[in-house]
Image 1 (cartoon, helix red, strand yellow):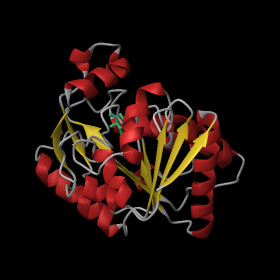
Image 2 (cartoon, protein in one colour):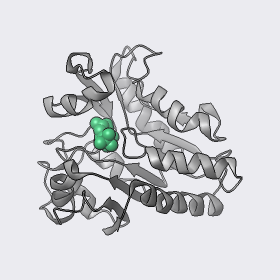
Image 3 (spheres, helix red, strand yellow):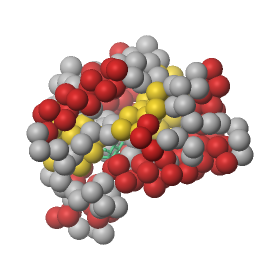
Length: 242
Ligand code: GLP
């Protein structure tokens, strides 16, 4: 695992955007894995700037999202599909139908999960997967206790994650959905390059476990220690437990 410490989220974003720019130059139809949460926002800003400047094009790229809440109305601003459209897809030249996420409003949720796995496989797998990390060590919505062999499935969110994410729902934890669909840890591990971004002191313990802890479902992100090409980009505060 490659660990890179930078002074700011913006400096991290430049390095991640460099990696994505290189990938798309070599493989214009690359498959990207997109993450939500606040951690990748500076990366999306940087990619939007570079796309506007003609440095990078997503015109032939495809993208798959990590996860989605169950049961949010189609037009809810915090539905992850809408977040990705707002923060990334609408700001670059990727065709709207080239971005896919798990369908959190499907009538048959297990079937939607299986269809999502099949769609990723049909696309040839993910070339570069962006990731954040939860304060409890989750990646995507693979909460502590998640099987290290898991694939896309329905999960229940922990009280900790719902409290962490309440800030996106006007601070009201009661408005945060209780369930989600998420790529599994094995799904994420199938991507060819994992790029995890973490900033701020609140992530220090999760980052310590990710980099220096024992691989265990207790801290799901530790599975990344087994990946042949994983890059972890941190600011000083997130790296303070190392
Ligand atoms: C959410 C998302 C994760 C994200 C995590 C951290 O629960 N499902 O994909 O990595 O929170 O979010 P943030 O980057 O806002 O700290």
